[in-house]
Image 1 (cartoon, rainbow, N blue to C red):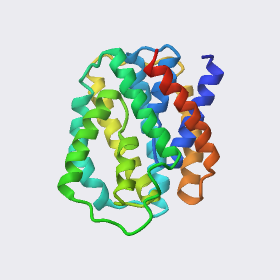
Image 2: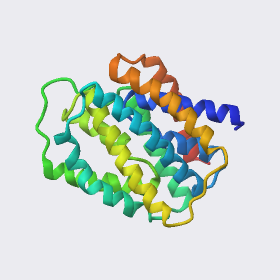
Image 3: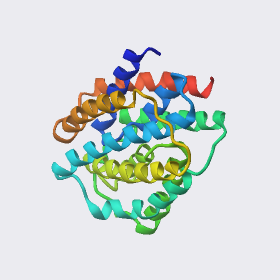
Image 4: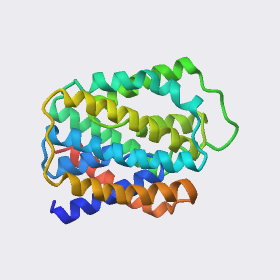
Length: 242
């Protein structure tokens, strides 16, 4: 994959994921993996991009009044330490790619609205269950190098614990804190960044700022999400059958 295409796709991933309050780590990992980068470069690079975009997304959705602390904290309380622990796990490369491929398919389903909008009567969230879910998602996200929002948001929508925009705000902060914990865990080992990392960050910030602003204040154009969804389906197939 040539450099111009790579940075363009990074911006597109950041834009489309930020529309729904995600940081885009699974997309960045797929792009960098398919571009031939090693896991040692891919995981920390994706987490840095994830931190930048999820922070923007959270600020935009929170400023628009969509964040609820009582919904967020039960998922985060054990997710953060578990994300740190998960970052210490070294998965076999083929297993890593296949788990990532499955996560990409969940992201595609989210972008296509498969899990619904969370509309309807709100249901009470069991705090103990949320804490347990957060621990599992934190461990998994740390091991893969994502923030876990693509796995949390479908649950919030399916169980009608939140509507779409509140889900986006909750997922964005969940991704941010887990990504920070995961990066901190990786930092104790050898962390490698490509010299083009600053360019990738700049493009992700541009895409993330635009996507999060539209997602928080407008009704996003579904075709934009669907275009990225098609790209991610191809990436998922390529990762699952290298």
